[in-house]
Image 1 (cartoon, rainbow, N blue to C red):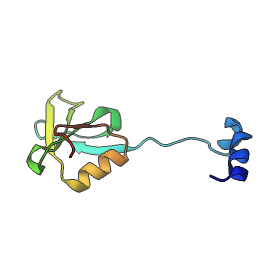
Image 2: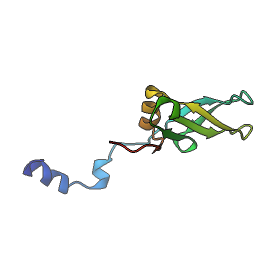
Image 3: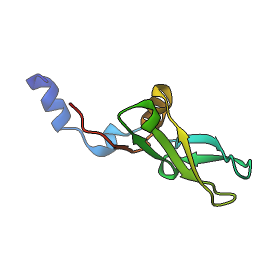
Image 4: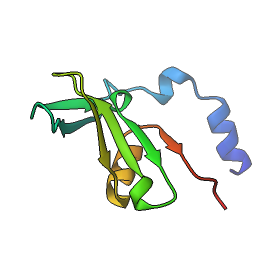
Length: 97
């Protein structure tokens, strides 16, 4: 940033930076349980994402809110992208090179 931009940022208050914002809608993901066939919506905090070295070891998981079953589903590149952009935290199961 140049000096004039920096001086404008330094003089900005939190109130003025967020003026006009009313609320943020949380991201929800639609999911289904293969055990009880329940359909529901989950928040990012309800999901776990594990990124492995291959597509066979990359998956997301959650606990079914209807029956309590542990559900694990494969996650391709597009699903990984959507989950991460929606705030789901990822656990990397392999080292990055």
